[in-house]
Length: 310
Ligand SMILES: Nc1ncnc2c1ncn2[C@@H]1O[C@H](COP(=O)(O)OP(=O)(O)OP(=O)(O)O)[C@@H](O)[C@H]1O
View 1 (tube, protein in one colour):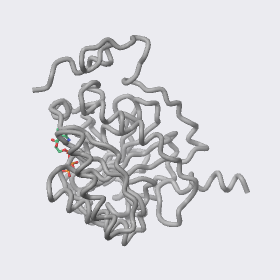
View 2 (tube, helix red, strand yellow; view 1 turned 90 degrees about the vertical axis):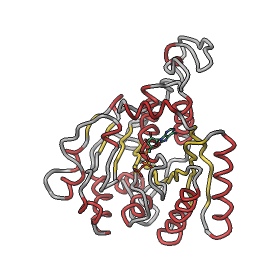
View 3 (cartoon, rainbow, N blue to C red; view 1 turned 90 degrees about the horizontal axis):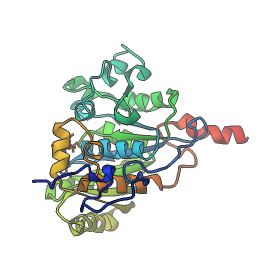
View 4 (cartoon, rainbow, N blue to C red; view 1 turned 120 degrees about the vertical axis):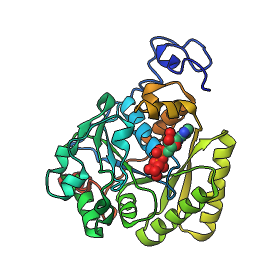
């Protein structure tokens, strides 16, 4: 059973019941002024896992919401084109989805809905089998469609489908950073390794961040990372960094049932604190400086500064 008063930190108390200064809004809203999107490149973070059910969508939703709470103008893109669930997790009712864009029924901009706290969401389509069978060209087309979006965002979080299908690889390749979510199950570690292997060997991805989810202790998270890192260092040309761990948390399950992000519903729960820490670290990653020579989200915005400097 979760301990009582998970919202305490927003109300001036921390998880242990200690008073926190009322004037200090952290950790509910960290101050991080965003730069104008017209000149700043968009940071794109892809979240993937290999194995399904490890908590990828929970991570995407809560990372995106934490970034919004920290002042980032954030778009959450659901690319799980067969079993979408970002909208369900946030209690949203989309009128259009990516399926309508692909079918030519609407523009990409028409699918964008405003979620909690001003988070923008592009929903996918659930239960549409043909959506999982897009051609590689259609995946690349989707990536490029985002370059045309006139939306003042500085960060985009991409929730991927499970597995190592072409779409997952393309969306990860097109992002500047890839977060691999793992949990303490042999199949999760094996499938995460398989995903990193194809990303590295077939798509030229050279670095990934590893986030351990549903851990029983911080040591468990670190241990999981080391397992994955050891075998990757031997066989792959990829730099793996440890992003941290999200504890197994009953409050997160409750938030899922309420169709809310745990960082909003229960901001001082253990998982919410961990998500905000991950978002704080992700905000400090180096901003990409220019195109890297292959398909990527927001290529236009990335090349704009170079053009105007010429
Ligand atoms: N840290 C956590 N603590 C407790 N429960 C969690 C945690 N992370 C995820 N879960 C639970 O695990 C289940 C699966 O999570 P989620 O849907 O985010 O996984 P997924 O990897 O996106 O799954 P899929 O591959 O099916 O899309 C959810 O019911 C969620 O409540």
